Length: 448
Image (cartoon, rainbow, N blue to C red; front, side, top):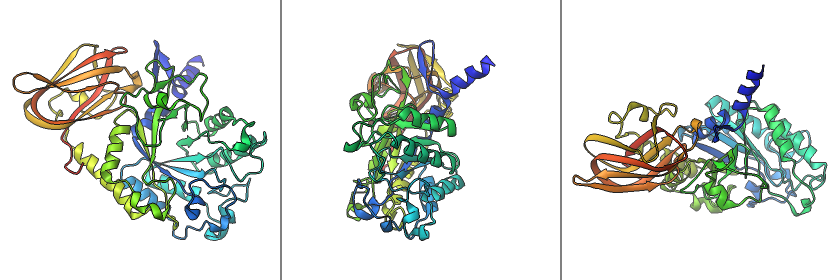
């Protein structure tokens, strides 16, 4: 029996083996998704506001052409793996048939008050083979009990509804936003998390400081050039954590809590027609991929539905083109067939081991041109690389191509276009023997 509980502990918690902090199964599966969609949708879509005040009439919510399958089709075609829906934002308006308030879709004209956005999106995600997640704002500007001790019970009741009536939930997103009328009230985050662990044990929990996934410290969608998956949360409060610390992580952190890089495809988080000209270009989205996924994070890109309940065509085209560019750039790994097979098989659990200060060399056998470098560690065994240098042979001598610090799940490096027949890499500093899982050299798409 004791071995059963040991295995359960290893699965459900970040673990440490011989002093090395390691991710759990949830965290490994989460990071491998790389890109997920955030969907902000509520009464704000109809008022032009970013933050509603809770006095909005449910009568204004009427997405007459709402189609969750349009969302999932766009997400899947663009390579996104999960949709996280704002089931309730700060205004308190609920996108499901909550038993605990009338401030919801059941008081709206949409489908004569019988509709359920959460159900339709969760069902559509399952049909499309996508994961489904929910954001439930702790701040509720409509609920009368907000700011009192009774509010935590209200919030937990709504959380239980979302976690029991809509199938598998793969991520639950919390933030620390708080109203002025709640200075003396403390959110019971530990109680919230316990409910998720009980009802959806495979879901990752997001907040500024985890416990599974952390905020990256900005809403610009990028992690630090140096980005550790580990941080120490002792004495830290949700909503008050140091943004720079979250952005870079901590080489000596006690807990494995990888950053999620949230950003909107538009100026705001909710759809406003006046912001139609602010949609990010595919090239900008590709750059965000390099600065999030390519810096050991995960990209969470927000696409807000319009008043009809649909993703705008401009937004859809932007993410499809983004994925097309990325596919074109990373289609041909010039190291494939030249490097040890385990380094180009797209499997993190097949590795070569490298000692600090050991030089690894690759001979392409003939001249090749590239301007992108990919590195991956087997993070199941920890994040170990602290600094490295890659050089290329110019026909006469070795020239520096690039320097890098952390690698982790994935490091993508943009370099000058070079032509060479040989490269070599030296890991200058590492926290132990490195488990190098993947290496790649690519020529960027002309569309980048």
